[in-house]
Structures are given as structure tokens and as C-alpha cells.
Amino acid sequence: MSVRPFSRANLAATVTTGYLPLALSVLVVFLPLLWMVLSSFKQPGEIVTVDLKVLPESLNLENYRVAMTTVPFGQFFFNSTVVTVVGSSIKVVLAILTAYALVFVRFPFKKAIFVLILVALMVPPQVAILPNYILIAGLGGKNTLWGIILPGLGTAFGTFLLRQHFLTLPVSILEAAEIDGAGHWRRLWRVVVPVSLPSIATVALVTVVSEWNDYIWPLIITDKPESMTLPVGLTLLQNSEGNGAGWGIMMAGAVLVILPILVVFAMLQRYIVAGLTQGSVTG
Image (cartoon, rainbow, N blue to C red; front, top):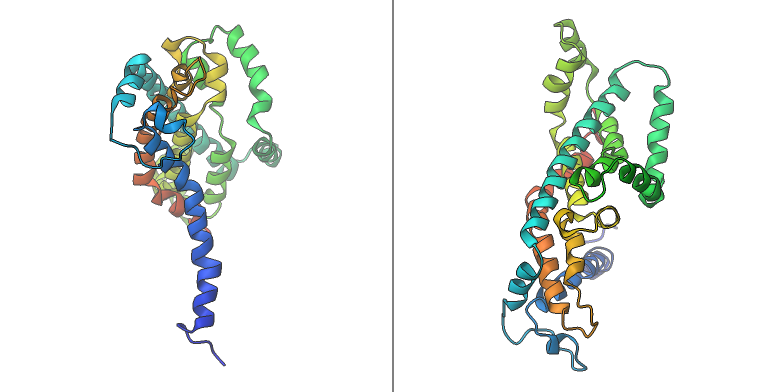
């Protein structure tokens, strides 16, 4: 006997196993962001208090003004933009070239190299912080933008994702291009890249978000405001007295940091779904 779509049992199962977990997941992600935005408009007495105040008494922009004038916010924004644009561009290009070589170019120890890339995915990036610091500091890269960018130029995730997608491409397309006299370079940029734009956009978006939000490495390699990125620059807003007077200012600074990347992510997030599912169904 088939169950009716709108029966009580079916509706209860749908709500319990579908909508309820989804709603809880959204709340876990959204509520901290909402609290941060609301706190950015609050005065110190509204944040550190025994009486919980969810909504601010007024939409006061004083915290935003203080956050942007107390520290060189414009310099931080410029540094983050340069690091994100340059670092992400080089990462994506290297991921495309490496993935193409692993799929379409014959060379010795190709499988061993791919295994090493998989191993790199499993190793926490914090393990390489000390060797990277010794290397970059020895090269004179401390408190420089290139010192922030250089250690993270390799992306195992992007290489792995693009390789798996390139494996699903029809071989006939590459064979036809080769018959027409196209070499590897032309086949890559004229054939492979155009049909792989969703996957490449996914790698680019994930890379941009990670570069913009990176905190640990820029914190270690920089100690001057002239070379700090936005996440590191937020630490300068912290109230040294620890009396809670600076929490509203820090929340305002955090909103200013995440707002640009949040807008970019919201506009391009559909590429993540398209890129991660592209090639999952073949026929």
C-alpha cells in the first residue's frame, strides 16, 4: 500500500528528517552572524550587562566610524585585496596546469605525484608554519605582501578537484583538437578550460574566500600595520584594558571584513554546486 504524499506520517517524516535538521543548521550558522551585526550597533553597556539585550537601543554608526579611523583600515583593505587577487590568481593557474598535466600529459611517476598531492590534503597546514617562517624570514619576506602570498601558492584541493573533473571530459574532443594540430597549450586553453568553467570557478571562489579570511600565517609573518591584512588588523581594535568597551568596535570591524567576501560568495555560490557536481553523472 502506497503512502499518500500529504499523509500525517509522510509530513512528519519530511519535517523530522528534512526541514528540522536544515533549520537547525541554518540557525547554527546564521545566529552568530546576526549577533555580530546587532552587537556592532550596541554601546558597551548594552553588550557587557547582566540583562540580555538582543536588539540595540539605536542604529548608532559610531562603532563603525571608530573602527575605520582608529586603525589604518584603508591600508588593511588594500593589502587584503592584493594578497587575495594575486594569490588566488596564481593558485588557480597552477591548479589548472598541474591537473592538466596529471591527466593528459605522459611523464614518469605521475601516479606517485598524485598520491603526494592526496597526502598534502591530509596534512594540516599548521605543520608547515615554522619551516615557512624560517624560509620567508631568511629571504627577507617578513612584513611584505609577497611573504604572505608565497607559501600558500600551491593548492592540493584545487588540483585534486580539477583533475577529477578533467578525467570526465570526452576523449574525442581532445583527440579532434590533436588531429587539427593543437598542442598541449592550445588544447588546455581552447578546449579544456572553456568546458570546465564551473569547476574552475568553484576552485577560484573557494581560494578567494580562504585567502581573504586567512589569519594565522599573516599574523605570524607580519607585525607592522603597513603590511597587515584585514583579519590581522582587527586585533589592533581589541581593548587592551579588557573591560569590554571595545567589543562593539571589534564587531563593527568584523562586519566590515566579512561584508565584501560575503557579497562575492552570495553572488557566485551557485558555481560551487555546479562545479562540485559537474562530471558526477556521465553518459
